[in-house]
Image 1 (cartoon, rainbow, N blue to C red):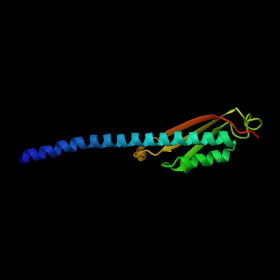
Image 2: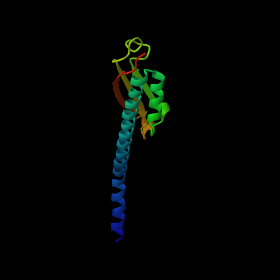
Image 3: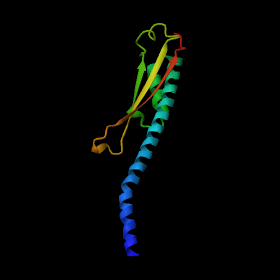
Image 4: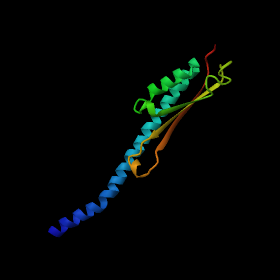
Length: 131
């Protein structure tokens, strides 16, 4: 009986690292999915704001407000073309505004040299605002 108990402990010790790696992988994939959904939603809301107001500052504020589960200070907002560039600077109505959000997802084992994962969300809308 004692030999069987020792055998079970040894088998558990051999399987435990594999189970932990699998659980860590599931958690990481879930975090990537949540980040992707949040970024896609925030990019769509920010692009909508840009199409209605043609104001880059409002676009950035909308993106920061809409990335709720993520840290808004770590989200990089890229607006193409910017408010100062043509065609948005002269006659913006009908031109395309693209909003791209990038977020560096911290990796649980980053201290061992694993790179950060970059998750991105994009959206584009036609500008409806007229000066």
